[in-house]
Image (cartoon, rainbow, N blue to C red; front, top):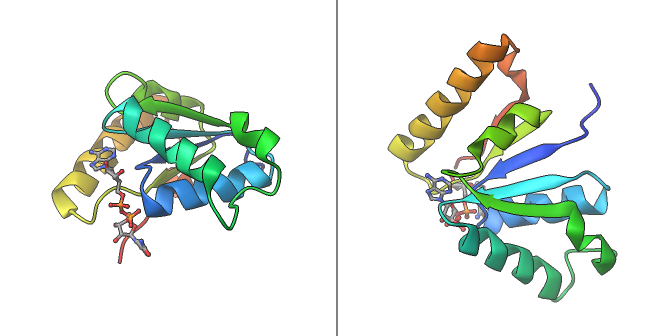
Length: 118
Ligand SMILES: NC(=O)c1ccc[n+]([C@@H]2O[C@H](COP(=O)([O-])OP(=O)(O)OC[C@H]3O[C@@H](n4cnc5c(N)ncnc54)[C@H](O)[C@@H]3O)[C@@H](O)[C@H]2O)c1
């Protein structure tokens, strides 16, 4: 399966790190968090990171940003969804349920959903 678009839910340490690696691999990614300002700060952190997370800083525009309330529908276009929210089972369940509802509408396999947890 070719991965052309990725959505990462949660733009903290894990989410932003994964976004940077995908960006390096030329895969467009959207970072969603509770507020767009949080994912915007994450993208800024990636850009300014030292040592640099990005091989080529000009690729920063491969990372789009948004929030889970206004922009959640973008998951419908994603080939891979990465959940990287806080280590709270209720929050993770909530996101999972929201994704399942989208997938049911499309009758897709759920193999493309990665859950990040300790
Ligand atoms: N940091 C690590 O080294 C590490 C290693 C392995 C696994 N993990 C796991 O990865 C997951 C993320 O860890 P982290 O260190 O990146 O956490 P973090 O606290 O750095 O980031 C979590 C992000 O999730 C966001 N968030 C909270 N609720 C949300 C919601 N409902 N929707 C969207 N975003 C939401 C927060 O605003 C925050 O930006 C956790 O489950 C953690 O246990 C972390």
